[in-house]
Image 1 (cartoon, rainbow, N blue to C red):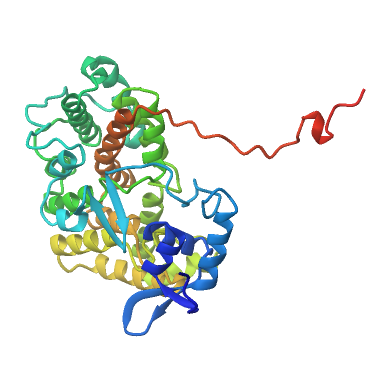
Image 2 (tube, rainbow, N blue to C red):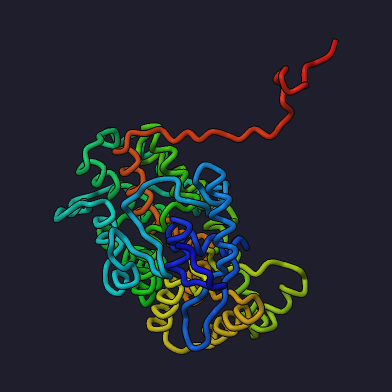
Length: 399
């Protein structure tokens, strides 16, 4: 029975709409549902009138809530990989932040790929190949060549997919390591190649917390590619191409530029104020699925501070975080945390997005495998909005 109260809890709102809490939070971020905080509590309440309006719209439109399901809307694919709910992130039912306290990317990849007790990375070797280009372009080129030569990439058994996945991750680590190869865990190989051994633990934390994030743009691109029965190499290339967009992983380099501005000025408050005065967007803040703050950002920032210790740059970064939060009402997100990691150890934009890409490849490969097992081809229909050429609609060409 619908509640007559003007404000209801997240659990009640999600139940009335028959959606997950993550979807409810997405509705809030899109302005479809009003939300307000409660004094002395981190829990929020949701406007009953908005909930009833959305439910009524859904009942008259095939049972779905807002009809834009591809824009942070209702779930459109079943998946057993990642859950985002109540401001927390889970991989295969395990808390991702808890995993990030000690697990390596390889361990989390094995979990996401359901490798059971086997280690798909054991004995994996790849050739040292100088990258054809830097950053994502070099990684795409590397995978395109390696995929052509890897006959095992066409095998579809679960063990074969896991071993192919391990080779792909190693290729990506090599691409962002200047072509060097290593059988060390990804975080150690990257820290060594980049000459920042002290950053290894922070890199490890970031890799794990970037490993997957449900059906984001790049994961969806990977699943579309995988649904055509292409190889995991090609599916990951689709993910890399999507990740580099400025509204996805490309937001990390933009946030790094903001931090560099604050570093040059020596004042994070001034850097934020100048951006806003120029009418420019403030990258690195807010996430539709985490209205109360991105747990990945909190964990990565804590790992950076623990590894780096007190230093002036981190004071400036904290000023940026505080000023941005106060100005926008949005807390720092994972892009802000990755940019902070890069700035702390003098890494560049390519390396910052490299941590994102290498970590996320584990999730992409899990999505590719899950989609392949489903056997379905992802082929949505389009809602045509152009001129109607049908005679019955009065748009025949007149001679």
